[in-house]
Length: 355
Image (tube, rainbow, N blue to C red; front, side, top):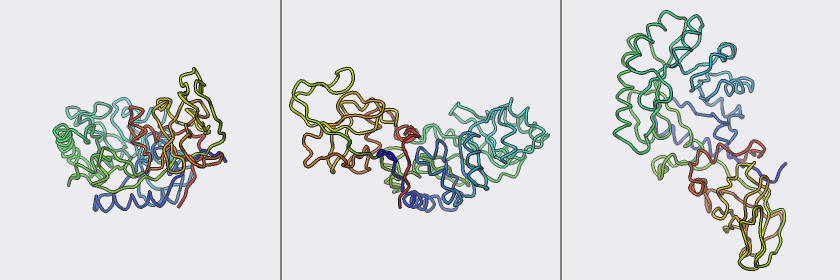
């Protein structure tokens, strides 16, 4: 096995689920496990999956993988599928989000479970309120089984006025749909919505990033005290001393200002270590920070270990350990969000599950 691994704690994940359950009360939890469970690969553990009555993915291909793994309960495909997915949707007994008129016309004679997606202000996909009754009347003449209604809140982490407007539109749409169908699931709340906008209308929630223990916005863990489930780590493979004026890595972008001790670690941008971390990112070695120096390579990078005592080849290196360095700190250096850092760890990095 590679020395570079993503260490994932299943027990921490389940503890986070328990905390979310306690917070949302009697609402059903539909975990969002798209993108390989945000890069953690917890979606590949059948024991984890079987703790839920329904799970959510983004793609039909992701749902097929769960079926082939052995998950027999309900799988909901959040995103509007392609017409080319229809055969697989039927074959693997999937429930899908529905909002496309073109897709609807292709499945009128198909017995497929659907949740109607309502456009409330995200303007990504969804049925506009003005078109809803026409859409419904076409469904009423079809074989489709309407089991749910949902929407997505675009700004639940910071814009209360806009979010309340979205929720109001969704409430109106729900009343309209209820006139025609008995609805099993009503959902609008992902991580930000769960924390900020618990309501009486919805009976299902869609936690994502908070299940994995990372904040959906700053200080959100003050409300639901979740803990990070994974650590990205590697080890030192080579140590050398360089003199003042010597250069490190490609393009000669780093020039030593003094005599230094430099360690090479076997993780690079092909593993998901962002090149933006050059000259500002750090790693943890022997509980101390070591600065990344020189351009990050495809398979490795170099760090300054001059001031770390007793450092040696084989020492563990944490890219993030959730204490001295966090995913959020790395995301800030890269001008992005923790979601992206987690979900873009390469498949070539082994995931190791720990207690």
